[in-house]
Image (cartoon, rainbow, N blue to C red; front, top):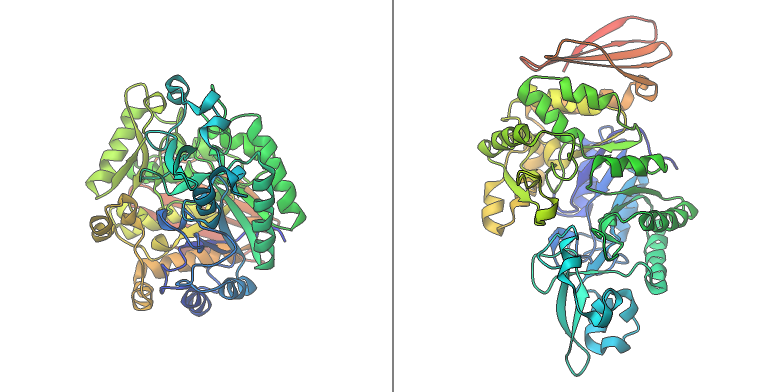
Length: 489
């Protein structure tokens, strides 16, 4: 079944009410018409770290969240999207634990990448490492394996601990291919409609390269996964934070992609009261994208915006967000920083706080997102116009917790009374129900301090007009009889 051209929710399994059952109750009670496009449930699987992104297995649901019955029940009314961290599994997974216990005699040994699979005699070469796009100081960790406690160095792209909790999979191994098939077949049984391939850019390890989105090898892997997904009627969404040209190559090959450029461009337009960069982008971007403004990580900067931004201007936008409470995720590899040392990977804050908690500015930003071609996803904190959670950062020491507040049912229902949230929900309903969004999109000429976007579909048409000086946002749309209606957001 194709992906619906309607708005989706992004949420952790425990962030709206504490578990999957309560999430389903809230969806049905308050959001049945709001998230007609479905719900992206961030990893609900047993995990040993990274808030679900270090999964032990995809065959089970973390018991504190619920069961597969809950996922299937949500899937009866809302198309469900889940993540597959196709690059890695948890150190605590039964597969790696067996490898630790039995060493190279483990039946799962070939799932992983001991360094001898990469370098001669397993001895790492610094010159090769210097070329890699690193997510930690070294791309491997040392473990003791087997009864004799032999030291083994194994590839680990991610992980804040040493040794890492996230163990890379050898996607060339037939054993890995069988395991991925088992995961996909289980998703099909559990009523999952779309799978996001998280960290897919890192699956190819090849000396002499950055070990990130290595061409053409990555396409061979993606084509294999797509063939598997197609056979099960599952849609794929590759998640790749990279130079925009990389994303466009995926789009040219027919894949859905994420619009990781839009959050920055919208923030920039609202902050500097100028449509210049936004309009230029909207006229050239591929339409087959998932759009977002906020997510569980941060607002993408590098490498997503490479060659699209002047770093001196970018520093001003970053500083603006820092002044509003944001913190930053930084690039580790010197080779992948800007020539002037600009090293901001992501700006971490809620989108509402990034816009100075100004209701009209926030609604203007959401209106732009919802008018841009693609499948709009709204993150749960953004849905509730959440403010920066400084206590969460201080409590955990994790900068991303600034935008990961867990809401009780009472907090959700209190947030739903806020005027900004009511206005956002009304806007989402319009986006879901008005049929012109299935038609033709155009960026209208306007003064630099305005945004004018248009959709038309037969007799139906709607136009968004935003005055960037005061963030007043108006939609004019035609009813079937041709009468024009003005709707101020």
